[in-house]
Image 1 (tube, rainbow, N blue to C red):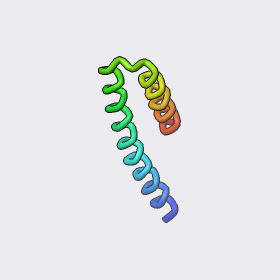
Image 2 (cartoon, rainbow, N blue to C red):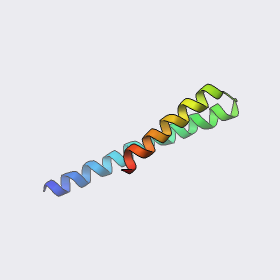
Image 3 (cartoon, one colour):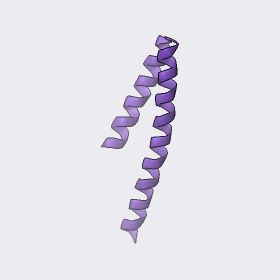
Amino acid sequence: MIKEEKTLKNSELKTDTSNALSKMYKDLSNAINSNNIQSIWQLSKNITKYHFRFEI
């Protein structure tokens, strides 16, 4: 039962993460299109943090 709960929590976390990353990628695309260097830098940093936090 505990194993099932962990699996459920992990799947919910991945779903949540993919939605958040999707929004960040859209924001990054908009920043690139408008050539906003500060936003590009900040969003790239956040996406990298998300990637390494959930891949470990």
